[in-house]
Amino acid sequence: MEGDTFQQWKNQCLNKCDFSKKGSVDEDISHIVSFINSHDRYFTTSSCSGRIILFDGVTGLEKSVGDATFKFEPFVLHVQCKELGDAQLLHTVAINSGLRNSGITVGKKGKIIMAVRSTHCLEVPLSHKGNVLTTDQYLDFLVGVANQKMDENLKRIERFYECLQGALQPQEQRCSLKEEADKKPIYRRRRKRTQDESVTDCCQSVRHNENSEEEMNCDLLFLS
Image (cartoon, rainbow, N blue to C red; front, side, top):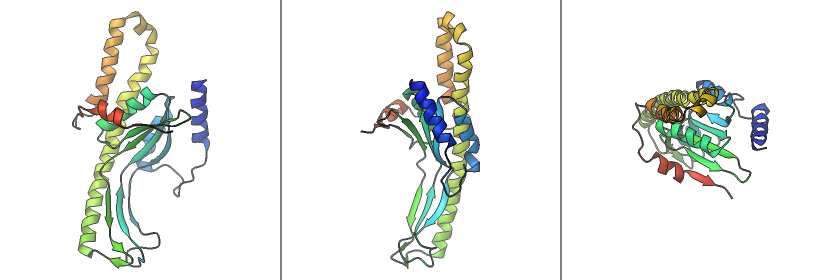
């Protein structure tokens, strides 16, 4: 019954219309979304590859009559997971990929959502009640910083994808070897160790977080 419920949620989510302004998945992360949705234990509920925006609520900076804010928002991905262990695996992948603002939420109906998020955001006020608070030179500097953050953002996206493949593909292959593994306890232990190592080894360029298990527990939220 539990598996049937998860599949129903997945079918409903993936078959509904995309009500975002863009109306489609961002090109820079479409391969990640497709890969996750092809796995029977996960599906994506929302995503954004990252963006640089001037937020005012009315117009651009020169015509601003309120409080204009310059923002860089990094890659974010929300994934519903079949079981808590699936979410924890995805959390480990995200943390080891440098996406250290990631966390897990469990809803009242048992929905387990893994949020993949980064920490390198940027938010700077540019005007207050229509009064511009900055210079053109500083604006140019902010744009340069935001562009650098976007470059790093794209690198983290690809790092996450590589780690995700390393974590999920061995798991799928292991299903076809279940009967053999059941007959060989030693092989089963070695196989488990190989999967655990694959999550970390594929992210050698990122410093390993020795407290990842503690962070995972802290990021686990249960909604009432």
